[in-house]
Length: 415
Image (cartoon, rainbow, N blue to C red; front, side):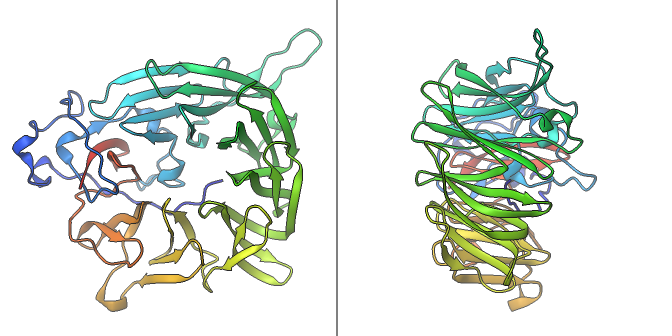
């Protein structure tokens, strides 16, 4: 489960609105015939150039948008992994690798079987990077064989990040019967890879299971029924152990063996997500009342309490130092290490209107403000002087991905 902000990305700008560095830029490119551009890294980007607009395949947004043109779940739950100047796009039964300089599909890999459910596009989560491979889980049907009835399985495929972007290895794990029989939506996620173990979790309603898979032998190392893993790091897999309807306990297991190392108290309607290296945020109602805390993944102990009144806010880690949280017409930033409040913007405060946050990355907050797209400093909340031109849903040092009329476009990053 990934905790992300509600997003509303507006239309991209016209080419004439792009930054005035056109002396070395080619003419405006159309999505159907993009011009080849050299992408230059900027970490973090300050703006995005409409002249290099690239249309991504419909896989990127299929089943993701609502009637308001928003992406349900937010950009970090799009089935897309940005890696350098490439995008890895996942569907229920395959992976496409897109060159973000010109929009070409430079590699493809398919699952080794039939998808478990129909209409599951909106349930696909992004893959994860593991060194020189991108790890992608697929939910597939296990056909009947001999006296064995049909069932459900995960196929884990590791796609190389180098041409020709084919599978370096693949393996399968049989799922419990509930995965085939449940009427609830079934989601699979590659949670993370560390020290030769890939962690995959499957969830449907109050049912969950997590697996540790050896990336060298491709054998199943361990199984934890009931665990919805959320984060991998510091030799641990951490998540929520489903114990009762709508009630879970935070739990940490050894990454290599799956042995339980610690368990927290029961939490009603819990929300857990990664909050930085070695830290997860847990919000929900416990015996002593509502809690909202940052937990150490190695011990389950509380590292810091979140500021009061934030339990309903969705927070995203900027992969640097900061949690950026939103709810309604408020944006709040918290130090990921200490839980200290850095700044807050509420509607009408200080003569400013909080932006609709679309992405956070490496110390920057991207979104749409009263006057159009904006970028803020994540540590201070101050407006950055450069207008970003668009409000991206996903960002890395090379590109920003922007939703426009239910289609996803890639824009080159500018510094």
